[in-house]
Image 1 (cartoon, rainbow, N blue to C red):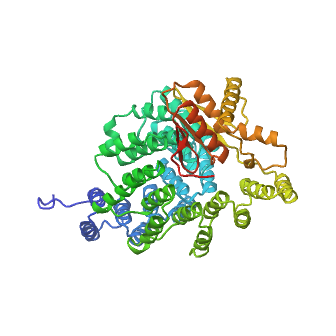
Image 2: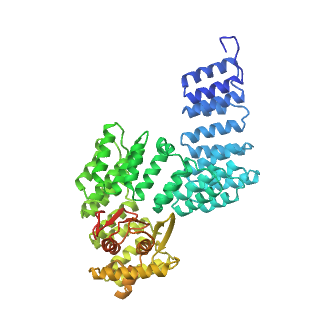
Image 3: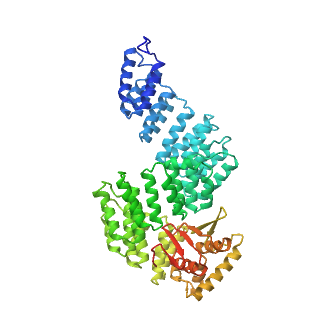
Length: 584
């Protein structure tokens, strides 16, 4: 255009600068800036806003802010441009501060501006500012705007306020796939998988086709619940090529299969992935580790190294989990040390947790305690919790008492720590000390975290609690449990009542341990499936030693394959044995 003799004007430069921005061509953008100054357009609000966007997107926030400050009359596009620049480079609090300034200057933000600042609130968990923006949007008559409402749903969900997210969502007159996805993802991320699937079913009834984000949320919910049939049905709503060409979708499908006990299917998806990035390799390494395929997990790591892919923290979590599963203490030490020495990776709290868990399971409690004491940061509840598991496994009540006191100091609201300490006192017949802990819980109105177990039958997820009598065939379930107990006693099974550490009669203890949620789910599974079907059960807490023994014997007398995933690992029961490596 310039060679033809036409000079650029204030309409030309914004498009030119936008092109430079999208191409990340900083050198050409700076030359364009020079032409802007030479042409006398540097005080034009549209050109100046284009320069703000250009410098901000290229990472030169100081230059972008200087351009912004030089604009004599700033409009909503100018303010949004500088806020977006700060958001893109992780300066979320600064972006929120700019938004407040813009309102003080009398700006009337549009829907795009509100959505951008809501995203900043969600990134820093600033729900109070998000609520203020919500009220402002309603006052400005933008409460029915689909983009603003979707931004509010997303903000509340990412801040963990699912009740408020649901309230906004239900009031929306118009919902697009992004709105549905925000709700599904929100429920899945916040540990409410059943609610995530309920919203997904509603979305299907509205004939809204799932996108990548909603499908990731659905598969995550299915993985959490062990809802294999639902996960497979949902995945068929999208073309398989979308999974194989999209690393995020593919990883979600691999993760779903792995956590539902179908590692062979997860491996098949992995092999078909068109591009295998580090995230996908990490997913398959962790899946193999969870299922006890330790050598395969190590081989995959070898392939990662051969391909020149730099491992990250998640890679080593998978490797350390594999070592824990197989009790490979020396290998665990080697991988843990190689993080720093070979890959210049600083071990995170999760890696210390894996090592403490590995050492604790191996009975090396003193070494695990020393590792905690040598940590560069103060240990959190995850670390002490891992050591507590080792103490329980090897019945070191003295160290466990010390650990629980640390946990209670860190998490005074967590009822589980008080219960464990009370049980330790009870196991040593210190009933007065145990009662003091229980009284303290009652005074603070603390309740023990309920244990849930889920089992999927014909695409429907059934939920059980300890002593549950709400299921439609509850009577049949308890009859089946009675029959199983009778058969197991003939095999020499005696309920391990030490896992019910209350000062009550032995017969009553047997009743408590006999109706744990996973046993109810197992009895229901035996009643509702064919002999050739694999029974898959998910539990939100760790399975106790009595239930572990119970499941092994049931798998023997019924000749059924039973897969149970608790919050710790997979337990695969077949013909009276379990491959999990746990001992009680």
